[in-house]
Length: 76
Image (cartoon, rainbow, N blue to C red):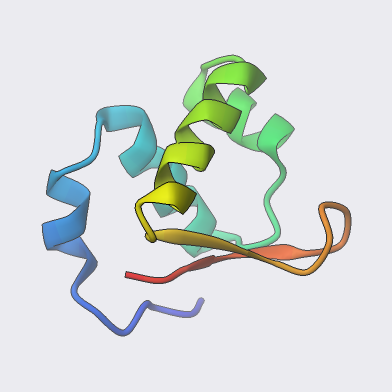
């Protein structure tokens, strides 16, 4: 498991509950799919996509590689 360099706790406090859960699951498994996140967090895939988009726009999350076969990276 790769731990982000910056102190993620401060950034997590600014996020909503689902966004925090998404970040924590991505830290555990950078190759997790949106479908898997949906099942674990118990929200639909559309809400997962919306939360991921917000996390990407705020510079906390980054997609490395293609949609299929790529992985997530927590930046902050």
